[in-house]
Length: 271
Length: 271
Image 1 (cartoon, each protein chain N blue to C red):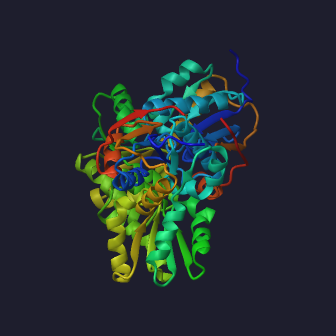
Image 2 (spheres, rainbow over the protein chains, first blue to last red):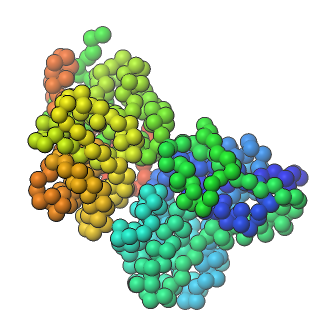
């Protein structure tokens, strides 16, 4: 099937965290139009069972497929970890996730081969990152840690101060004790807490541990993928349209925190 | 309509927090059979818009109505705050919430008439507690504070230590500064953090502020209501059956934390 390269890229996440991926996509591919779907009526996915995550992810993917997108970027780590095969089987579209690019970036950044992953309960339970890293390099070992409270802290906007610092410390201590030299942020919410996480890592390990965020790696991967397939936009379109399944009063502030700007347009939709 | 008093009481909440209400119901009414529904596939409700909460609450209420219950107890503060009229209009059943009993308990406990309410964003935005208190006593004033992170801390099981203590302090300081002598726990998740909240209040106000939990007041209200309507069970049945819309790996531990025991039976259901 020859796909029209002027179509938008579809991006979805459980909530608004995936706007960190949309932001990097926009930086890497300013010509591309992006349609983003945040399932804010059912966020978070990371604490739910794999079966429920797959069901929700299918609904999101079907909605975006109806918007005539040329490729689907699954910004959600939890969905990328448990539902990629289901989405690829169902959609007649390229489907790209964040696990592969994130794992490759972590492997490249690590000198010791000991990689820490901070993620949701669902992503950790899936074993997707250890599996992906093992497929890239046999010299690497992955140490995972579920950090559900960091999702809530990012949503609440508590990005510095004692509470996020102590929470991050509690999650990071066992990773540092395992001797990791890279911590991969395996959830789209965590980049908001990056400064806090880096500060705690500096305290615990004196600057020997680097933080890797999969959003940037994913955007690069999407850029290369579109170029290779002849799917890159031939002329400048740009623009980010955000769809959400629930529009609470906090939407604009939260969206701005993740995106670093206002979206060009937004609407509430029913899946 | 004459309702069969041997039917169970239906109880629902956004997640498992409402098991604190089921526990108090069971203590007050050990003869009664309880069917509990926790919408664990869509928890939390407290950060969502009123429209979405009403839609979800309707789905939960319809599900329990099909289980032939004699009365519906809305254990969720957010649903009780925004959806009671919708549920009462739709169901041919008594529908009882937690806002009224909680507000009455707080008014009774306060000597100064200055009442603090710790609740979700949705409950605070609805103004349900200030409205209810104003209807009971014109001498009382309500000071509200949304505390979404306490929901996540209770779900994560971080009930003591520095992180919950500092988070509780951040939420409670403005309430104490307003001169409240009662803090009402306006979310079913918060009783798990009661010891921590009381400790922080003792530090901030030296034992002059009492904590009131609506779960016990609601159970007493339900007991009186059933007795007055001739709906109390005529013979001992007992038993708590828990239905959930998602069954993650953490279910049994979280349920036990809120209920203080194992449910008699549980199942995953599709609304």
